[in-house]
Image 1 (cartoon, rainbow, N blue to C red):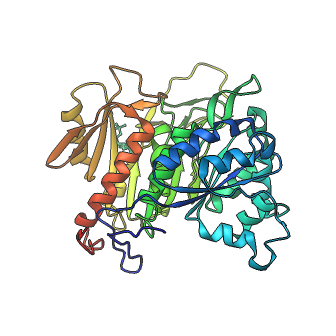
Image 2 (spheres, helix red, strand yellow):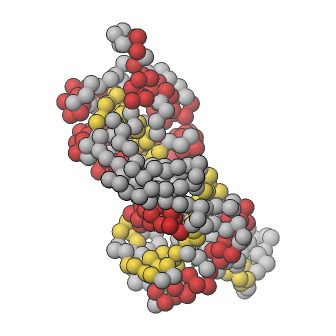
Image 3 (cartoon, rainbow, N blue to C red):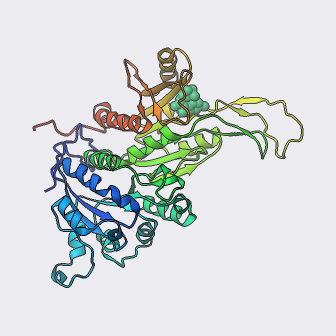
Length: 427
Ligand code: C5P
């Protein structure tokens, strides 16, 4: 039985819950498709069960090559389903019932094949049929060879699924079962179980809110071939965009060039220069929240050459627009504007100056002088608002994103008239 949110989210009144209380006992429908990563499923089942959830498994024919229904039934205590037509279930439309009874559908491991079926809307077995029939959120943990994952068809399907609102967990980059290395490794059971927990805790907390996120570097052309850029990887901004979307926000991500897999958000707009980023950002206002995580180049090239330069140029620079400051002062500005500050000295002092100069609400400051931050998976944030600052311990960029989203959920209710807390805890 689905446990209720004690603090309800009321989309019509744009009210945010102060805190969402959920309990164990959610129902997960786990679809297992044919990948060697299915070997990790017993561990995943153990973790989901420890968190108190009830799991029903569906195995595809290929999935059954890696794990047998009996094991799954023993591990879950529930019947495992494999066939679309069993002959004994004809009256009650088994696939509809299975897909509707769940609170969440998880496909792990998700092969390129099931992704293609989902993207195309095919329904030729039990798994694909109930994925079409479900009215519940679907989360997938892809697992495949790196060349398969990078294949244009798979990427196209991944994009379609993201646009359709399918939530992705991974894949990760690392050693693959086939002996190759790269993107395509299924996320670890702990990551999947944690993501499921977060989903149950957060889902819908920011529903109905529009968020603008900038991420990555900007690049400034010298000529059609060369440019200047910075070391931003985009990892922090992408993680924030992803976490906001997972909390139900409608996220528009404006991103400079990065080599990262695209996050699963409503809209992604790719730009190159700071002035393009400003144009696109302004066009995507109004928003309820703006998170300016991009490392915007402070200076552009004055009069970039139209043709490839043949001699060493003497570069002249021109000041770029300050996107964060523009968003903060823009009439249609977001209700909550969050900036970043990458500093090499006097972190608190310089970041505080930035907060006041750019008139944003919060700054997430980090020291990029002492340690590698650009491109790394970790970050150590000093969180600053006007009258308060707090040091966050070093954590992964994903954890930073989660912590920030938690803060947004807990704060927005108090900060804006529009977002009134509708009830207090009675539990
Ligand atoms: O690069 P810096 O540490 O000054 O960036 C501080 C904040 O200002 C960041 O949130 C960044 O996205 C934003 N910024 C901007 N436009 C600029 C420079 C920085 O929006 N031209």
